[in-house]
Image 1 (cartoon, rainbow, N blue to C red):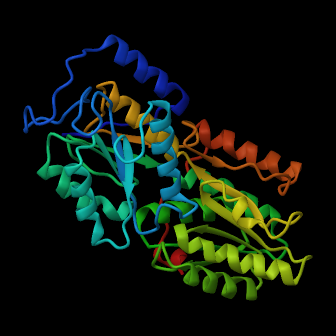
Image 2 (cartoon, rainbow, N blue to C red):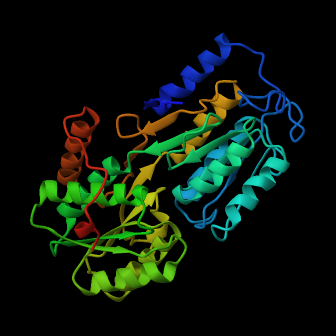
Length: 368
């Protein structure tokens, strides 16, 4: 099946889904009725009675990574609350400590008969693809990876577009002309963060020095701390991380340095969720410059709503960028001055209207 790529504004998608649900058919298939055709939605389940239920499997970053997994879980919880579901039966999650847990966790949720199951993170794609193929009458959502299957909806984000703005902010705010990028695993989704960050920084400062460290993990705060220590020690004053739980170590290093020298120009740009609270040094000091937000929570709610209404977009790929309000920078709480914010806003408009196309990959030399 050819996947149809499209981006829909998150605010309008929900309304459109509701309209389609109201106008469309109500003969939603009962799970297991035809194992050769994916279910389109269900009004009754063994798990939740007459309620639509959902669950998610985290990647190795964990549910409290203050980032990607946490944002997805917040979306699951919000949908559950809005639909009167209870944790455990109506909605739930299983945490993966390693990649070896993916298959087990996905199958455990299948046995518990959840109507819709989310797999969070690019590295889960192979496991979810196999499970989806073995269970063609069940519906799945793969977040952050392409996956061509009739019972799987793939959700992707244009991380490069939001990261471009992070690069602009960093390049305009640095005092040493040195900034850094700390990535988790060297995979396409992190490459998109990296590519956008470089493009944005060089758009406003072609001569800027950008140091890069791929730690190889999303759950190793010690590696993030070490990477940040090396960068700050070499003169870098602003680090953008796209490393999940590993990025918590970047915050730790930055806060320690700020405590030792209150006048130091030390900043971190957070990722996925608003990581302002992670940057708190004391009641008056915070080292979070801004965060590159991904609307993972909104995408979860969007897909769950579609599935509940019998309009699950199986076999399709939904892409959210700046135009669709799927990525953006968080409120800096005054850390970014008005003149710099004006530049960021100008680039936001240019990207959203297609005037600037942000690269989504980096060369091998840029990864070093």
